[in-house]
Image (cartoon, rainbow, N blue to C red; front, top):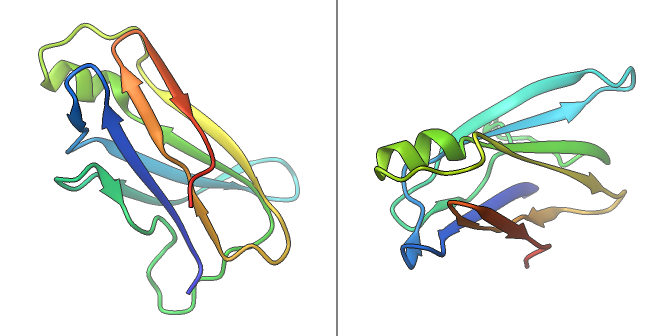
Length: 116
């Protein structure tokens, strides 16, 4: 099964960022972004598969954008954060079947890396 997953950790609070909306988009050949799916992180701060769940979703090579609604998340925590959204654009190469993109978040910064 092909998938794109994420895990968001709130490093300031020392816990998973539950309830954050994450959007996944794909750049078509013209460069236009096409919305694929949205997910709200679970209690463990995870979206285990952002690809559409139509039973035969395949991870295509190309550019994907993950957009995390960090401003809304921070507001729900009664925290004043700097970033309203965090957008991460990644490249999926031919033959890739899984991409995991963790986000470590605090009110005034973030970091990401390729997970496993």
